[in-house]
Image 1 (cartoon, rainbow, N blue to C red):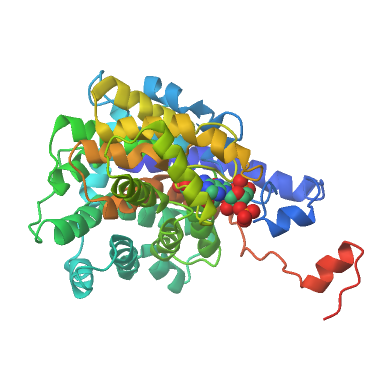
Image 2: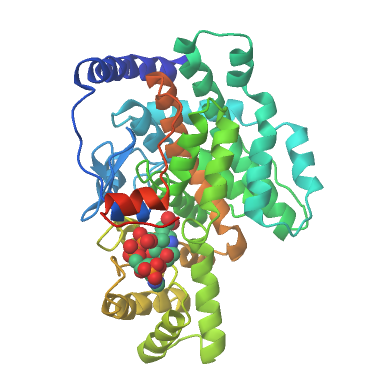
Length: 438
Ligand code: CMX
């Protein structure tokens, strides 16, 4: 399986030369100005991170190494021609920058299958938690517990030269990604299926095996999870899960610590947990209205009520996007293609008709359009994965592909400890020309 690693190394060394040239010859080039508003609203729009794997455009959506999602649905290898692309292919693209062929993808599937064994102590750690601990608590705890096996940490302690860090990080990243479906499925079966676990099938692809171990072995679920794992994989470097993984990694924390930090960020309701919040919000609306096929007027009134209560409408808005999230559109098209007359999906479509003008009319919400989380739960629910408390874990399994490939790049470039400066209120007031009393 050295083939993928060697290809990565070849490409990465070219990038490394560019990186060194930038620092050596062009380090003093000014990138832009930073306003008080940008700092006080979450550092939005400040070009402050180097991320190779994907780029998000506000008016177009995500591109992975230059390719949009519809392009990837066409170009990435699939299990069968009518199906959805394999996440292994997206991982290859993010790491190497080229569209893989089927053999490249099968190579990665095989590599991950050989690394997928999860040590017993990880299951023991999960089992030591109360069964009703939140799935994301169990997931991030299990990830940290695997740091025991970090080859990066062992190499660092053994005094390995920093120019080889990327190699050990690559090994940890591949092993961690390989193990995640088993860990996630274990948590799922533990909580929702009386701990009746299902052994992995090493002949299956990464997402197909996840569906299998969860006990949803149908062609339909495998197809959906392949798409799901592709569209949630990366959203450039500034989102909370990517940034947290990168930040913690900058202290030379190993991949397990770094990714667990990212997953704690993903578990927040303004980020990945929104995919669960959407389901709870709709359930509450249906109970309150007393009708599981609410009219547009009833939905509009419920959205108004949510806003009046000072709550957010989950699944809507975005820190960067200013359009309907293409990840929403791709899932909506999937539903149109494969799903006929599902009440929940009809309701999601009705919310899409009704919500944007109401959100826009507030005058403060910068993006009134749906994001990826507005519909993902409805698709899972349709195919029998009804346990919405688990949905953010699925997001997390997918997100590993992007943030962990970025972590390998971080070590290739030798990016240093991240340490922006913070300032006091007086400093900001002085900058604004206002005299501030402490
Ligand atoms: N419902 C109600 N109010 C919203 C809103 C929504 N869907 N989206 C934004 N707002 C509000 C903000 O809370 C903020 O209010 P205050 O000025 O009172 O603080 C105001 O509108 C301006 O916010 P913004 O600049 O448009 O959005 P931010 O960049 O601050 O936040 C996001 C982006 C995603 C956190 C926000 O749109 C939101 O809370 N959406 C709902 C939660 C959600 O779906 N999150 C998932 C995002 C995708 C993902 O990461 O998985």
